[in-house]
Image (cartoon, rainbow, N blue to C red; front, side, top):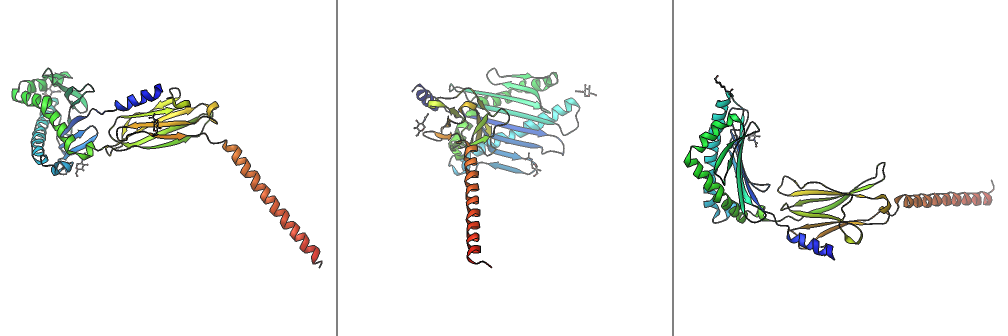
Length: 328
Ligand SMILES: *[C@@H]1O[C@H](CO)[C@@H](O)[C@H](O)[C@H]1NC(C)=O
Ligand SMILES: *[C@@H]1O[C@H](CO)[C@@H](O)[C@H](O)[C@H]1NC(C)=O
Ligand SMILES: *[C@@H]1O[C@H](CO)[C@@H](O)[C@H](O)[C@H]1NC(C)=O
């Protein structure tokens, strides 16, 4: 009873707080594309730009929406300007380090809702993969992560127009983008139902069976997976949970394994219970102990042997009779 209440409570708390991510990588030189730019909602790419391929891609549903085209123009202007800012950043930073070419400047901006419903935003930059500067939206200050970044922090914080642009974007624009994209993009909004399967690792040495519940293809990310034992109570001991991992197609997967105690292997069955916002109820897949496989195999071997022996005996008797009836 308590478990049921607890689990139904957990089911209602499965709400995904979405976030929008902006990524941009700028390089100088010839080895890599000059710019790669991505806009993602959670783990779903909704905008992609590759300067080498002259390739720009958006989630097409935006453009089907009446408001989408106007919105797209605004996003496009902003992202294009951002590439210019990034080209400048990689140029001045490479110059500062006396680097020639093929060094990377990366920016990651993020905004979203926290679980309490309030919003948050941040932005950080890296040079050659190492933290360089960050921008705190609430205090409107730049921080240098390394002493060589102080020059860049100064350059950005003394440009008041740039500061206002950043604050406006991260305090309101970014959240508005997130809201609009969630409204326009079916790909982002559409929940995907998890597929649940069990696989069993045969016991090795210690004769403990490990059963894994593989939950995959679901969206959004938030999911509840439990192993239920006797009387439907959630198991704690012997349960090993993986992390929720992106599948790369906008869906996620999670594995949760249960080590079945040896004494329970022949008698107790266990269920993998999955709760997800894409389904009204639950998905339950049950693992039942194999009814002593060795004994079943032994019985089959005995039956086959007996049938073989009887066949041989019958043929022998028929042959004996034939011989007796036709003596030479
Ligand atoms: C960008 O486009 C170029 C040229 O088509 C391609 O070789 C490269 O792999 C692309 N880079 C990324 C990160 O997509
Ligand atoms: C770059 O070169 C200049 C002049 O040679 C030198 O003063 C400066 O310290 C160098 N910068 C770095 C980061 O090594
Ligand atoms: C799971 O669904 C089944 C069938 O709809 C229901 O009987 C059971 O109570 C549900 N279990 C939980 C823990 O929600």
